[in-house]
Length: 44
Image (tube, rainbow, N blue to C red):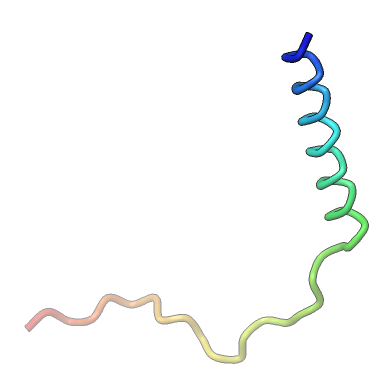
């Protein structure tokens, strides 16, 4: 019985976390103006 209660509690907590993150939405922000360095430096 303890296992069932623990599983239900964990499921409820996980659902609450997902619901909270969904309610907050995605963070507002923009892309960086600086380009990423995608080239490999030349070997000596």
